[in-house]
Amino acid sequence: MKFLIPPFQIDGNFGFTAGIAEMLIQSHQANLISLLPAIPKAWDKGEVKGLKARGNITVDMKWENNRLTAATLLAADDCTVQVKYNEITKKISLKKGQVRNITF
Image 1 (tube, rainbow, N blue to C red):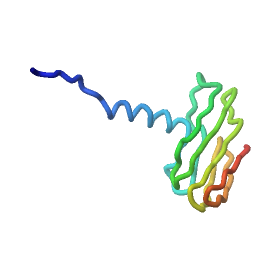
Image 2: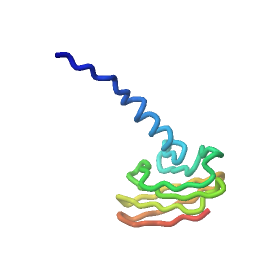
Image 3: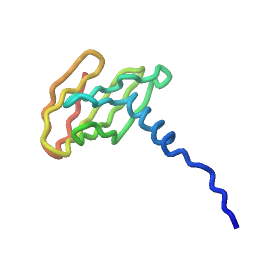
């Protein structure tokens, strides 16, 4: 008996998810987190929780009318990062386990 298993395109499934995450946060550069760098106009209102940025920082945020309304960072370790939204960059120092609300 032969079983036919359809191919599962794991790279496509994970790639799509990674692409969505990249539209919401980017942290390619050391100690720099960009919030909503490529938010589509069609997503005028939304919320995301638990995205991970480099440095093991958890990011939660909300937006409305394509504008960031709330952002929260949770640090797994002591760190200093720059958080960028549009053309504004803020330097944020965090202690391990500290939750920090950021406004722009």
